Figure 1 (cartoon, one colour):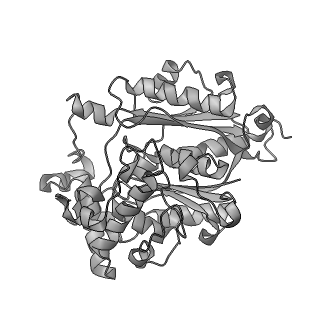
Figure 2 (cartoon, helix red, strand yellow):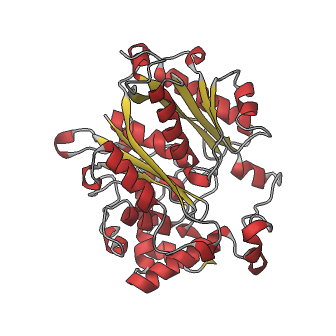
Figure 3 (cartoon, rainbow, N blue to C red):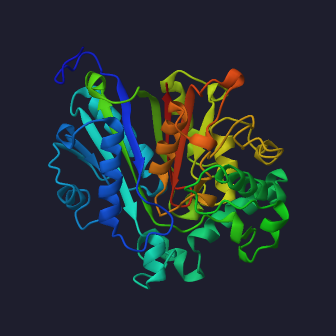
Length: 393
């Protein structure tokens, strides 16, 4: 087995533990408490003590993230990452952590996130401001009220204009996410919805009605990545990190070359190439879905269908647990939970599916076999960044 200081032979990297904190409506916890709860549960899942952790990654909380959160958790890591690129942060961090472990710079890296986004609004501790800053390049868009959802809506409209994608096809994404959530007892919303329900909702930003948009919840998640030499001490079989990719595109909409192409077109290609697999090999896909269009265009850009064919691809229940390509098997950000930067939740669900731990929401292949390969792909900003990770049993 390679030593921690060996630089000649990269070590294999596995996910040893995953967990969620309490999610949904959590009125009596702070974001720090949710971080700690998720971290403790992930360590318990791995069967490891926190003393093994020598790497730590976190973003979105604290004046000196991740130092402040590490201190709260009683950790003094020798490897840290506070990359913050929106919803794709956690896939990018997982890639960085895997590279550090492979190189011998760390043995066990904990990724953790927690947010009380819903409770803060309810308690009027914070008001939602999605127009972002008025300095730098964004100053040319902010005066026109170009909020985050407006940017996504404009991109969706371009896809509809260019490829004939319909609002009914976009609605199918929400309907199938809810169908998956019905099998997840921890999902915030589980009652079935129809395309007509989605279309009849209040308009938020044309073409998005309310059910085209993610929910707002509280919650946290944690993922523990370890070097292969720690696996004999772990409680469960490993899920291997096979390949990853990352890419950034733009912040100013005028600098986005093509509204119908997300940065997942690059991060996905890199991840699949490095993993030595093809999109057709993937059994389960966990994709960032703050809005229905995100799911559709990410499916195209990851190569599950050709550009412009996403609308037809998402029809006929293809994304459900029994569909051709189960997507967002826990219900996703559209129905399960979305406490902010949701990318870490994608990794947790992908690992649970590969381990066969998803309960009533477990995907089964022919003959009842468990999935072999999963992809988690996060999107940040308004298609500003993407991180993609391929995992396998």
